[in-house]
Image 1: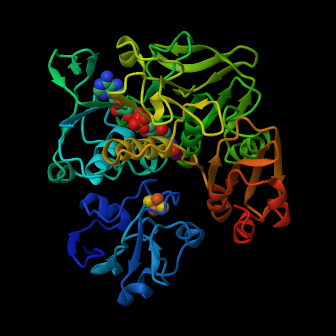
Image 2 (image 1 turned 135 degrees about the horizontal axis):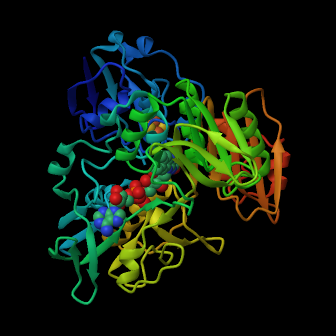
Length: 106
Length: 403
Ligand SMILES: Cc1cc2nc3c(=O)[nH]c(=O)nc-3n(C[C@H](O)[C@H](O)[C@H](O)COP(=O)(O)OP(=O)(O)OC[C@H]3O[C@@H](n4cnc5c(N)ncnc54)[C@H](O)[C@@H]3O)c2cc1C
Ligand code: FES
């Protein structure tokens, strides 16, 4: 399945991702720079912050418990579409997903 | 500065290499690691990896990262000596390479207490991916696992083994679980939780001998309880920092490689970080932390000092987590020097213990309360009175400006 990461400067990178991985894991596996994922997906670091593209907000669903608390500590502006990418698991439904990356993660 | 060498390619060594490039270092970076494969994260080894066995997910970065960042990664190369006079490292095979700055990120290894019988088949430990592969393979045919040591890693493993339907006994010599790092109230909470998961937890139970039948482990004889039968033994009795390389080179070593507030060793051309380093705390005293946070923040601090000449002392707030079954323990700050602890009532399923020293918050231990944890990271050092004014709701205290 495909995911597109759009960096803060507008650069788009489309990658092949594995179903079952998180959006953070797919970014690491594909060497995307704008996501760090320091805690490996344990909801401890907020260095995997992303903005879900408006067209995909419904499909990715609401934030998980505790996600907004973590996002309070994110390095870049938090918007209504903000998510921790480690908490978005890739299902078939999300094939084609587009996420935007923040200016900074630390 | 033309060449920076990093010894040890774990969490901290990898981060040092990545941060040096991020900070704009244009010279050569060589990252030496004794283990095979690309640098990976250890925390999932006792958590998700036990369940999914997916080693790809452990990698800190794919191979392409090292190429495009021009970081020379040398796996399966052990550094055997440092020649400080010549400013060179010497590999175990005798190859020499010069450095302008050297970063020691040698981590730690498991401590094996002198319990007889450890050579039996089925006696395992968990530090590396290779260890985790062995444990996973073995777990599939295990009926009852015995964990020696009720610390974080032993208990995370116990919870994963229970989830896989394996019987588990945890032997802890001390009177409570995770006693080195947690408050008594939190130890108590986890004791009940593990027993509820169906794990047998024996406190004050020191392992005396590992018993075997036909070369295979068959149980553990405890000094004052009984022989616990089992077909897998995990030794999880803590770690020891890898200091021998530094020590042989004449660097100051005392429960870790001793560094100053800028994370320099007693040789200004050598820094040290992570599990291997003993660093001064801003509030006084020293610590050697075994956490992702310390390894990563140390590495970033060293990169900033080398590239930007930043001289501010290292002062990052420590944080740590441990996932045990459905329980997510989070710790902000360092509670070991506490003179007071407070169990703050929480909603069902959550738990919070605040630790103070001389009336100021020094640490917060929380379970399933991420909002409180995140607030605590910013409230370390706040007076208790400010927290009291907010009813000990740390998020509210933060909003009220307690930090
Ligand atoms: C099973 C497990 C679970 C964990 N869970 C958590 C957790 O939930 N949260 C958390 O914060 N922390 C956790 N940790 C701790 C965390 O992984 C460590 O604190 C962190 O990896 C330390 O990083 P480091 O770079 O100092 O050392 P390491 O990651 O240990 O890396 C050191 C590397 O240096 C290599 N090396 C040593 N000497 C030499 C030499 N002479 N030449 C070449 N290479 C050498 C070693 O082989 C090793 O690969 C866990 C650790 C384990 C083992
Ligand atoms: S990877 Fe740390 S919070 Fe997502």
